[in-house]
Length: 319
Image (cartoon, rainbow, N blue to C red; front, top):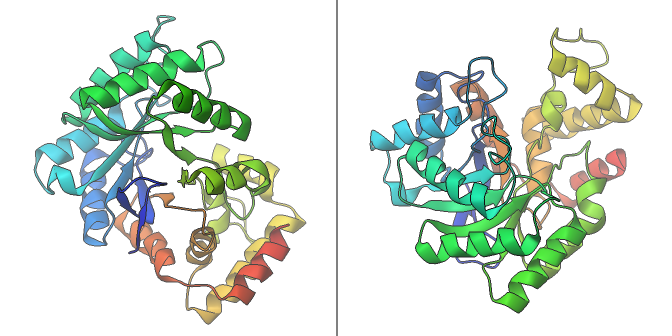
């Protein structure tokens, strides 16, 4: 496992970040604890969650993933200071109109709830989950700065922000002497490149913003399960993948991943992860896992180094 600085900060995070959206959804608590134990054993020190995980599941109220992580931390399977916990705020966490967004009101309530669920007195990286056009950026950033000054949050980041809005946020933090966003989570993979590479990547390089891509396997399309000659799995997720990626370009990318992977004795998924990590702008790639086997397979992608020619071939295939 390689460890990279998060943007311009001195914080070192593993180049694989364990995404925990599945916890409390497709992975129960016992399995989640096993996955976290194994992730640490493999060298991963960076876990990503959000308060809304997994509110979409029938019977869930939100906060299930954070609660599972908190219970794991309480068992002292690892020293708290050895793990970097990232969570997010923005999504709806109740029926009241004030139980969502990036207002000072909601942020202050949400951070206390996250701290309780995580059973910790600080959050390493607190991220705004998506844009809130109803709240002034100044209000959001001032609230986050207050949390940093209070010691409840150590670094702040954002997710799903376009380049223009991240630029404006950085300017506000600069002129008002507030904590600034040190990381961003973009949607980025071989089958979803332009949104990040066109404007956000140059900004992150110029301003030394850490980049933590989510969905580096294209929502599962780049796992090898979806091939020209294979049956489509029966699920809503598979239907979404069919509509977005199951076309000539998508299948050509998978074929090229399989070809290059053979030279490294690697799977399609491992090679796709290696491509994301080959981008020097990327700090850490978020991967999810429902089982130990899935985790072990995907993490191995961090050990693969693509040659310049191999990366160029994948770049060309996915343009």
